[in-house]
Image (cartoon, rainbow, N blue to C red; front, side, top):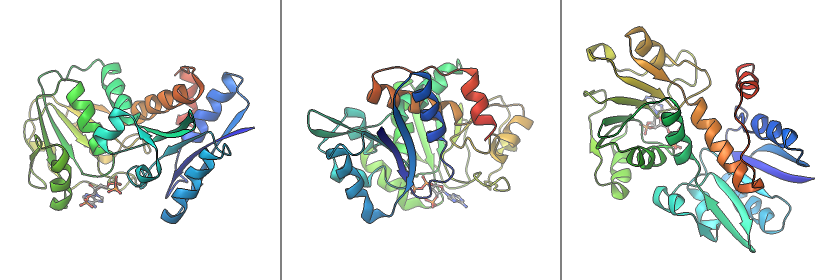
Length: 265
Ligand code: ATR
């Protein structure tokens, strides 16, 4: 049976196996998808297993989306642009790295019927997913992107590749049309981002990359203040859908059954 993996650390929380195994079964593909927690020293060996046809595809999550790159032969344009890889596969004897997070975010916003053309966006956080969100926002036509992070040096690093980003001091808000939580604050139900959204008067759009729990305190507060909200679940589903298509040449269906499967986790 062909084997596929998601690698990361920690990986226990990953819902990728649930989704991919659901689609594999639905499409009568004789393969299995497992999660593997690995240390940094094991990354090279796991990718080598793709070379040796022991593994047929890998999804990569925190904290290896950047560090896998040195072990790959070729990158897609978007993987290059974001220096971030979440999907690995072998083609014509070479190991390829692609990034489906960008498309995931883009489709999540489009699916929500939200036009960001010529709008302003504020991203809170500067972790691994942020370059993908920046590229997706650009594709969606956003005219100005602000970035705010607790640790300033991480913003400087992101600005090396995306010089058009404007920094906002930590804790500051502006009148951006979309406000994105890209920090890990909220993964624990009690987590609270120490920012005061009460200052924002008109209706805005609040997005959280986190999908589990489905409603972080960030989203709860925004909803209470009358703003539109969306969590990271659709982005997660769309990035998985694209990875599945890359590996199996089939675009699997995102249906209600799948949403329910995730809900009851
Ligand atoms: P990585 O940096 O490995 O990609 P991540 O989980 O993707 O990790 O990113 C973590 C993000 O959450 C960072 O922006 C981090 O801020 P710092 O750069 O200051 O560490 C942010 N974060 C995590 N805990 C936080 C907290 N308690 N308050 C504010 N920001 C926090």
